[in-house]
Each structure stands twice: as C-alpha cells, then as structure tokens.
Image (cartoon, rainbow, N blue to C red; front, side):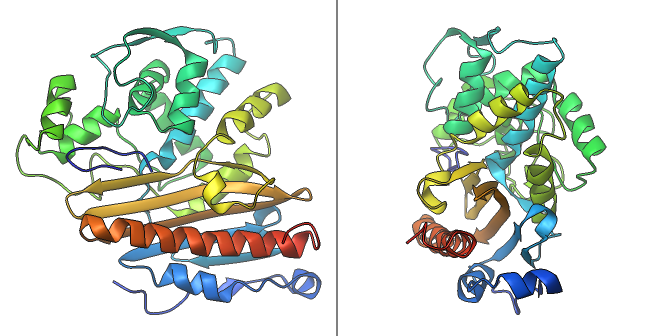
Amino acid sequence: MMDRRGVLGLSVPAALGVMTLPAAAERRLRFNIDEPLQKIAQLPGTSSYKFEVGTNGTIFNAAYRSDVPMFVGSAVKTFFLLKFLQDVERGKKSESDLLPVNNKIRSLSSPVFLNLRGEATARSLLEAMITHSDNTATDAILKSVGPNRVRRLIRRMGLKSIRFPGSTRLLFSYLAGAPYGVDKGWRGMKAIMQDKLFGFPRSPDNGRETMKGSADDFVEYYTRALSGEFFKSPATLTEFKRIQATADAISRVVPADTAAYAKGGSIEWLEFNALCLPGQMIVCGTPVTFCVTVNWDGPPDTIPVVSGQLVEAMSEILLEIAKTLAPGQYS
C-alpha cells in the first residue's frame, strides 16, 4: 500500500462485458459465476477482468474492459523475475550472485530489506520481491537486469500495454512532485514518509512514470510464461513457478491446496487507490488464468471495503471454477 507513510505493496460501469464460450465447450461445462463477475464490474471507480479456463480460454472465458490499461502496481514485478531467470539460464547471472543492499537503492515499502545493509543473494532478493513485494529488493533486481532490457523483452512479447518505471524510487519521486527522471534518493523517500513533497503531487495513473497494464496482456503473459515459452530449460520454468507460487495474495483468493502462481499489486496515494491480481491456478491439469484490476478515488476507509469485495468475488469465481472442473474435490 502507498500513502505518504507507506508505499506500494499490493464510476460504476454501465454494463457487464460480453462473456464468450466456444460451442463445444459450452456443452461440456457451465460455470455459475455471473453474480460475482457482476460484483467486480460494479466495484467503485473503474474495474476490469479476464478469466480463461483452458489454454487461451478453450473451455471458457469471461472479460470486461480487458483491453484497457490500468494502474497495476507491483504486478509488473513478474517481468523482472522472468528477465533475471532468463539471464541465469544463459549463464549471464546466478541466483547465488551477491547484490548490494544499501541507501543507494533503498526504497519505501521494504518489509524485508528496509534496515539491512551489505549484500544479499539474488535468490533472496527475487523471493522478497515476489513474496513480500519488497521495493528495495525490486530496485536491486531491476538495476541488475536493466530496465530497458526488460522493456525490450516485453516489446518482443507483443505486450503493448505494460509500462513500469526505471525504479520504484523514480516512481515515488515523480508522484511526490520531483521532475521526471529525478531520483530523490533515500533522503527523499524518508521525506515522503514525513508528508513532505517536492512539488505538486501527481496521480499514479499518469503518462510518464507509472505501472500499468491491461488484463488481456497479463492473461496472455501468464499463459505463455507458465507454459515455458520464455525459457529454454524446464528447470528454469520450475524455479519461476516456485517463486511465483509464494505471492501472499494467492492464499486470499485461490482455493486451498490448489497450485497457483501470481503477483499482485496495490497503491494508496492521496485519494487514488488501486488493486490488481493477475496469475494462474491449475485444477486437474487445467490452467485457469486470470487478471482482475480496480482503480478508484476515495479516502483510506474505502480500501478495506473495496479490497474485501474484490477478494470475495474472486474467491467465489475461482472456487466455482475449481468445483466444476473437479467435482467432489472442492467444497
């Protein structure tokens, strides 16, 4: 969550989007999820979702405003993980590499590395980045792989909506009024925590320093990444899945004892709020790939309400899909 004390962890739509289902699949399976889908579409502000059952939605798919880029926060960190593991696979890096952790990269919302100094293994930093959304770990990894190299990878994937800053500190500096491209450093981050800004504050949903993406692009990415398309070695895919399986948001929405891989994001800045959860669960060998995002304006007391509504709706949807795919296994 992000406000001037804590930073970046995790209009009512007029109509629901069109849900499509291949004719053959429709005869096999039907999913009773209209009501929770409607709940997501009617969340405050702007929401979007995409659910695909079966690879590329061959069994079922549902979408609402899924082509609209929205603020997704830390959900973009999955791309930094993927690029680092690609470098490991190609012999350019190792997860045993020691990377510096100090005030040159220290950032806000770093529950693991906030007060630690010295060096840490890349593996520990990758895990902290995904499991705890630690922003100091994120900036260490992003500095190691290079933001522009990650951007080129995303362009080659064809994911046109995905955008992220050169570091979380650059994002926070810009949102707090610093000129574009200026990193106010760790001293500046501490100033933000004390409610001090560098100029007129900006919305996270801006055209320069932001973290954005569409549900379409996140669902396509997870479908391809978790199938192994972006890795040469099965062992690298296994490591990618291992780390992605530790995201703390998974246990909130995915049925118990179900394999799942995800990375959520959120922000609270002034009165702009965002929640996003993209990923995939596997039920009886069938992938269920999803992305739900909501952006809204409101005071802090709206956050637990909207978050609770989103989690409840997603939990209902994923449980109903799992129960339909595996009758008798889920209750």
